[in-house]
Length: 122
Image 1: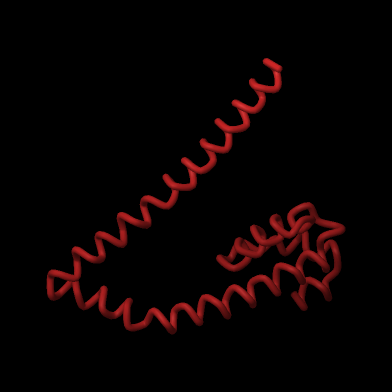
Image 2: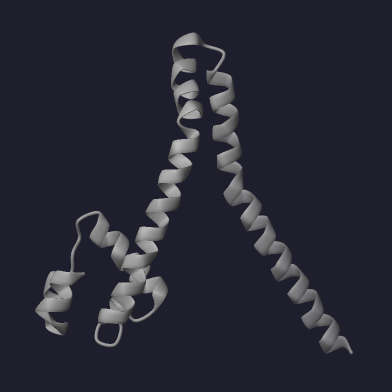
């Protein structure tokens, strides 16, 4: 019984630590939101916050379309290159590598080893 109590206690501590980390990760976003609220009191800086607020709906729709297209490319890369390249072997790795491709770091030589046609199509 002592052993099961110990493991139960450790499980509860681990779960508590996980939620504490999630709350700490969200806190900077809360601070930035409060900063934007404070900036709206100054007229010249309020122009920036009002512009972001006015463009919010369009930014949300852009983000939705961007995520769909990005996930499409990630799934395509996993299907085309996943069997042969470690960077595309899982969906998470393919998403990471696709993001690197998005910012200009293209593993062209590795992709050509799979085949020039799939590399050019992707």
